[in-house]
Image (cartoon, rainbow, N blue to C red):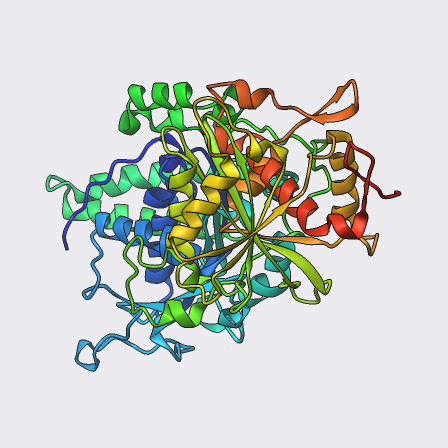
Length: 551
């Protein structure tokens, strides 16, 4: 047997010692979630329960393929487990390799990993609910759980962690749960904080103390100088400790938090300093220092609900046709998007600024969520380029992403700010956008919305839109993956009281230390798109071109 030495930081070491049946962690950026507890506990589940099954859960299947599985497989190799030798990724092992058949065999290899002892890791995502159907799992592992719809997880996936008690019911590892994430910054992710209240601190400390004592005995047992009689005594003592630890870990819940500073030996001090220079203080507090900052519940878009108003819709027929491995960049165009209505024009709107140019793309269509509303405006994607890149670069990026779309028509909505020219620029932004799209073969339908309504009007408008109680106001749904930047923008746009009532807090746009992709820019593009598409239904008044509606 080959010995593998692995460095563990403090939170990784403590998780290694506790090994609770249920483990939940809120750890900052680059603290070693996957390299530590996720990899270790997945190996533990597979080795402890031969022919059993573990569900690797993600919000989307693309998350699993792009962000969860690649670092997990790399971590397994770090622990000495290799593809084709100890496990088989999205393929079955050959018959000559004599791998036992799982208790509940996988029917298709494309959605699983087979371990050397017959244990199977099933890929399960919330956007492909059929992957969980009929599963009988012995463990669950999930990363990035702050993005997960927790209610749907409890209804659809948690019940699959069941059965096989006749095989593994005596083990503390049976039906183990492992969930990790970075710090939630919206109310939808707050559920994980409740796990801290479920932790028995004294029992956790008891497990740590006994495990440390066990490790001391084990180290002595390995010494060549230890006599045979002493080894027999140590083995009997260790067996007693193993029994006690197994019983203590049954039903034990462990919750931990860790900041990036806990992994500073690996990251280095300069990396922390760089993040501090690049990030606004509240972002640094949440992402790096791992401080709880659930904020902006009363922002400019206070009624936006990231569970209700978002969806996932990937064209997995296309993804599955690409083969077993997906190198970065192979699925970065609209062919992977199942929500794009073929043969129908794309609707776009922009916000332009010296520091960042933003674009929001949408289409009207049926609500993609189960039991949906009916007709909604679907925000298919948001894009941006930051200085020194220009509007022309953004339009080229749009073309590269959507050039496979089979309709070349574009409805381009813009307001008065896109018509400005000066002594250094004879073309307006609207002219530049139109010219770039024309050059690439798009047919642009320019739709001028007039002067942008006042902030107070837009504030009240979005309140009505997101409550979905006024039939005149079409609901909006956001593609959770593709429109993530505009989602973050509206989640982090604060409201202030100005001379004309409620206004967007635009100060982050003038703060060079604030990530401009998280400032109100993209929310402004969203405003333009929604108002442009629906202004004829709602009407305008006077020269202010203010929307008319009653609440």
